[in-house]
Image (cartoon, rainbow, N blue to C red; front, side, top):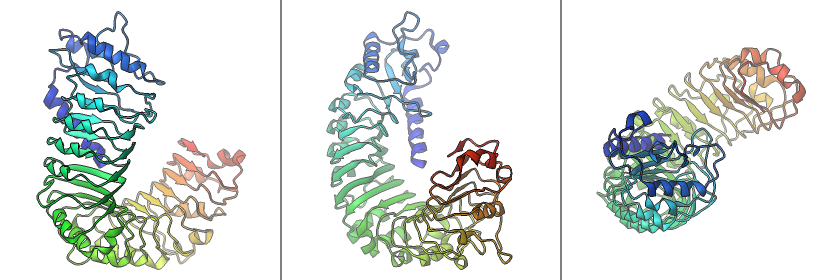
Length: 497
């Protein structure tokens, strides 16, 4: 989410700095402005022909007599003096998207375009053509989440004015082109969530203005090519792959003084590098978001990260240690560094909590403990992860009815802040879970009990008490759907499955 807002910020800054206020946001404001160029209008109409527009996104794109000025078409802004198209923004909003075999060649006549956003669409695994390198005035290019495939075109290296490049979450394969190192103005680079392979090209050292770098979610490998002094303005770094973890390489990391967000995922060699773990712990003082998931980390590795000299006790707000080999001792250790922790992800580890192991995380909003082996007594005693907890995810934790027994000795504290609870894929059978919920919170918005063994009845009045519930998921159980609506009776329920 943070990366999304950072990207939007870059886009807005570029828009107002480069194009000024004369772009004509409404037709009435630009009545005296230059109209769009005929060649560019025809290019846009040809581009439209290659797309399937199920939602009428391009309904204003026509050559009818009263709509001939393409500068007034949706998603387009022009220079008010010259009439040249400067911005084309067709990113998907509200689940309305374009699809089809996109023809980017048809846009080749938009020679003055500076901002191109085609993100969140479905372009049917088409390739990004080398011709993309012809848009030499581009400063912002976003083709993320749009079902592109093939290789990253090396001619992107021609876009010397580019400040933001986002090709993330597609099906791109092959190496990272070394020509991207030519983009000396680049501040935001996201190639994450693809199928890239090979080494990180050393030419990326040239990107001295870079603040955001995402190369996660691929199968990159080899040496880390960066040295002391490279990427000095980096604030967010996301890497995943089978990288070497030489001790001297960690020196570069320790000199990234602006770094606040670090992700090293699926980096199995990290568990063997004490130097890297110590560098992360002690020499990145402003780190607020740390994600080390899928790195084969053990409890001993976490002890190296979290010790008396680490900076985490005052800075860290987001921690993701999912898909490692951690036990309950790590969960207890984190309690000593939890004062500012707001999000904690420990999914898919070896944590076996019992009721006497509850630490209290005073600032925690989100807790993921799914795919761990929680004991049958885990909720019998004092259930209180923290008064600010809004999301609790316990998917596939082998929880049974015994886990939610309420006895006279229990000291369950109602958590009015809990809004999202995921108990799907467990072993729940009876209505005990519903009575337990009534003692915990009455302000749930989403409750997921999918894939259990629940049987009727749901307690009478449950829906009336849980009147904030908007999503109630109980499919793949033994409940009789014909009675379900009568039993639930929730006025604001938007989704019942």
